[in-house]
Length: 171
Image (cartoon, rainbow, N blue to C red; front, side, top):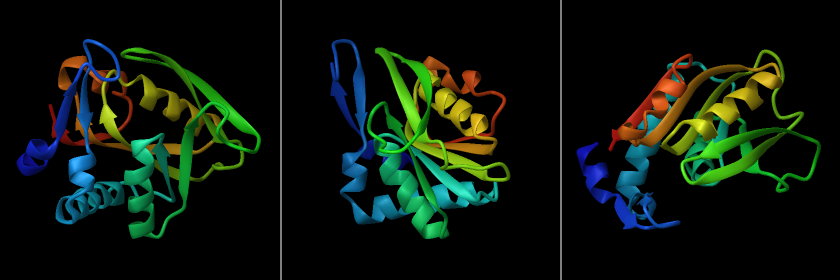
Protein backbone atom coordinates (compact mmCIF):
# COMPACT_ATOMS: atom_id res chain seq x y z
CA UNK A 1 0.00 0.00 0.00
CA UNK A 2 3.00 2.29 0.40
CA UNK A 3 3.39 2.36 -3.40
CA UNK A 4 -0.27 3.35 -3.76
CA UNK A 5 0.15 6.10 -1.15
CA UNK A 6 3.05 7.52 -3.15
CA UNK A 7 0.93 7.51 -6.31
CA UNK A 8 -1.74 9.79 -4.81
CA UNK A 9 -1.66 13.31 -6.18
CA UNK A 10 -2.19 15.96 -3.53
CA UNK A 11 -3.85 19.08 -4.90
CA UNK A 12 -3.70 22.04 -2.49
CA UNK A 13 -6.64 24.41 -2.14
CA UNK A 14 -9.08 22.24 -4.10
CA UNK A 15 -12.06 22.38 -4.25
CA UNK A 16 -11.64 25.44 -2.02
CA UNK A 17 -8.89 27.16 -0.02
CA UNK A 18 -7.57 25.12 2.88
CA UNK A 19 -8.55 21.72 1.45
CA UNK A 20 -5.84 19.34 0.25
CA UNK A 21 -7.57 17.11 -2.32
CA UNK A 22 -6.39 13.50 -2.62
CA UNK A 23 -6.53 12.70 -6.34
CA UNK A 24 -6.74 8.97 -7.12
CA UNK A 25 -6.52 9.36 -10.91
CA UNK A 26 -2.80 8.43 -11.00
CA UNK A 27 -3.79 5.08 -9.45
CA UNK A 28 -6.66 4.65 -11.92
CA UNK A 29 -4.29 5.51 -14.77
CA UNK A 30 -1.94 2.64 -13.82
CA UNK A 31 -3.40 -0.76 -14.73
CA UNK A 32 -1.33 -2.69 -12.20
CA UNK A 33 -2.14 -0.30 -9.35
CA UNK A 34 -5.85 -0.17 -10.22
CA UNK A 35 -5.99 -3.96 -10.38
CA UNK A 36 -4.30 -4.29 -6.98
CA UNK A 37 -6.79 -1.83 -5.45
CA UNK A 38 -9.79 -3.69 -6.87
CA UNK A 39 -8.35 -7.07 -5.82
CA UNK A 40 -7.77 -5.77 -2.28
CA UNK A 41 -11.27 -4.29 -2.07
CA UNK A 42 -12.78 -7.55 -3.37
CA UNK A 43 -10.92 -9.48 -0.69
CA UNK A 44 -12.23 -7.17 2.02
CA UNK A 45 -15.77 -7.18 0.60
CA UNK A 46 -15.79 -10.99 0.53
CA UNK A 47 -15.30 -11.02 4.31
CA UNK A 48 -18.87 -9.67 4.58
CA UNK A 49 -20.62 -11.98 2.07
CA UNK A 50 -22.42 -9.12 0.33
CA UNK A 51 -25.36 -9.54 -2.00
CA UNK A 52 -25.03 -5.98 -3.37
CA UNK A 53 -22.35 -3.30 -3.63
CA UNK A 54 -23.24 0.38 -3.12
CA UNK A 55 -20.89 3.01 -4.55
CA UNK A 56 -20.95 6.62 -3.40
CA UNK A 57 -20.86 9.37 -6.05
CA UNK A 58 -18.56 9.90 -7.75
CA UNK A 59 -15.28 8.07 -7.30
CA UNK A 60 -17.06 5.36 -5.32
CA UNK A 61 -18.81 4.54 -8.61
CA UNK A 62 -15.46 3.71 -10.20
CA UNK A 63 -14.26 1.49 -7.37
CA UNK A 64 -17.62 0.03 -6.42
CA UNK A 65 -18.70 -0.93 -9.92
CA UNK A 66 -15.35 -2.64 -10.56
CA UNK A 67 -15.72 -4.62 -7.31
CA UNK A 68 -19.33 -5.52 -8.13
CA UNK A 69 -18.27 -6.71 -11.58
CA UNK A 70 -15.39 -8.79 -10.24
CA UNK A 71 -17.63 -10.37 -7.59
CA UNK A 72 -20.58 -10.89 -9.99
CA UNK A 73 -22.83 -8.74 -7.78
CA UNK A 74 -25.37 -6.00 -8.49
CA UNK A 75 -24.13 -2.41 -8.21
CA UNK A 76 -26.27 0.32 -6.62
CA UNK A 77 -25.32 4.00 -7.00
CA UNK A 78 -25.77 6.48 -4.15
CA UNK A 79 -26.11 9.74 -6.08
CA UNK A 80 -26.39 13.43 -5.45
CA UNK A 81 -29.91 14.85 -5.33
CA UNK A 82 -31.79 15.01 -8.60
CA UNK A 83 -29.58 12.59 -10.57
CA UNK A 84 -31.71 9.42 -10.31
CA UNK A 85 -34.80 9.08 -12.55
CA UNK A 86 -37.14 6.94 -10.40
CA UNK A 87 -38.56 7.30 -6.88
CA UNK A 88 -35.78 7.81 -4.30
CA UNK A 89 -35.03 7.95 -0.61
CA UNK A 90 -32.81 10.79 0.62
CA UNK A 91 -30.28 11.57 3.34
CA UNK A 92 -28.72 14.96 4.06
CA UNK A 93 -25.10 15.07 5.21
CA UNK A 94 -22.35 17.52 6.11
CA UNK A 95 -19.04 17.56 4.28
CA UNK A 96 -15.81 18.94 5.69
CA UNK A 97 -16.46 21.88 3.34
CA UNK A 98 -20.27 22.14 3.04
CA UNK A 99 -23.54 20.18 2.95
CA UNK A 100 -25.27 17.95 0.39
CA UNK A 101 -28.01 15.35 -0.16
CA UNK A 102 -27.59 11.77 -1.38
CA UNK A 103 -30.29 9.60 -2.89
CA UNK A 104 -30.82 5.98 -3.80
CA UNK A 105 -33.64 4.43 -5.77
CA UNK A 106 -36.34 3.29 -3.40
CA UNK A 107 -36.37 -0.17 -5.01
CA UNK A 108 -32.56 -0.61 -5.13
CA UNK A 109 -32.34 -2.60 -1.89
CA UNK A 110 -34.73 -4.92 -0.09
CA UNK A 111 -34.81 -6.60 3.32
CA UNK A 112 -32.36 -9.49 3.29
CA UNK A 113 -29.78 -7.68 1.15
CA UNK A 114 -26.29 -7.63 2.67
CA UNK A 115 -24.61 -4.44 1.51
CA UNK A 116 -20.99 -3.36 1.29
CA UNK A 117 -20.55 0.38 0.67
CA UNK A 118 -17.47 1.58 -1.21
CA UNK A 119 -15.99 5.05 -1.62
CA UNK A 120 -12.58 6.48 -2.37
CA UNK A 121 -12.17 8.64 0.73
CA UNK A 122 -13.20 8.62 4.38
CA UNK A 123 -12.89 12.13 5.79
CA UNK A 124 -15.39 13.20 8.48
CA UNK A 125 -17.61 10.18 7.82
CA UNK A 126 -20.72 12.25 7.09
CA UNK A 127 -21.18 11.01 3.54
CA UNK A 128 -20.73 7.36 4.48
CA UNK A 129 -23.02 7.75 7.48
CA UNK A 130 -25.74 9.17 5.21
CA UNK A 131 -25.42 6.17 2.91
CA UNK A 132 -25.62 3.82 5.91
CA UNK A 133 -28.92 5.47 6.82
CA UNK A 134 -30.18 5.07 3.24
CA UNK A 135 -29.25 1.37 3.20
CA UNK A 136 -30.92 0.74 6.55
CA UNK A 137 -34.00 2.80 5.68
CA UNK A 138 -34.64 0.36 2.85
CA UNK A 139 -34.43 -2.60 5.25
CA UNK A 140 -31.07 -3.92 4.03
CA UNK A 141 -28.17 -4.88 6.29
CA UNK A 142 -25.06 -2.70 6.14
CA UNK A 143 -22.38 -5.35 6.45
CA UNK A 144 -19.24 -3.30 5.75
CA UNK A 145 -17.70 -0.06 4.51
CA UNK A 146 -14.59 0.01 2.32
CA UNK A 147 -12.43 3.03 1.52
CA UNK A 148 -9.30 3.50 -0.53
CA UNK A 149 -8.09 6.39 1.67
CA UNK A 150 -8.77 7.56 5.22
CA UNK A 151 -7.82 11.05 6.40
CA UNK A 152 -7.03 9.93 9.94
CA UNK A 153 -6.87 13.42 11.47
CA UNK A 154 -10.58 13.94 10.70
CA UNK A 155 -11.51 10.80 12.68
CA UNK A 156 -14.39 9.80 10.43
CA UNK A 157 -13.94 6.18 11.47
CA UNK A 158 -15.24 7.13 14.95
CA UNK A 159 -18.49 8.33 13.40
CA UNK A 160 -18.87 4.91 11.76
CA UNK A 161 -17.85 2.92 14.86
CA UNK A 162 -20.99 0.75 14.78
CA UNK A 163 -20.02 -0.67 11.36
CA UNK A 164 -17.07 -2.71 10.10
CA UNK A 165 -14.76 -0.25 8.31
CA UNK A 166 -11.78 -1.21 6.14
CA UNK A 167 -9.24 1.22 4.66
CA UNK A 168 -6.37 0.55 2.27
CA UNK A 169 -4.37 3.79 2.73
CA UNK A 170 -4.24 5.93 5.87
CA UNK A 171 -3.09 9.52 5.42
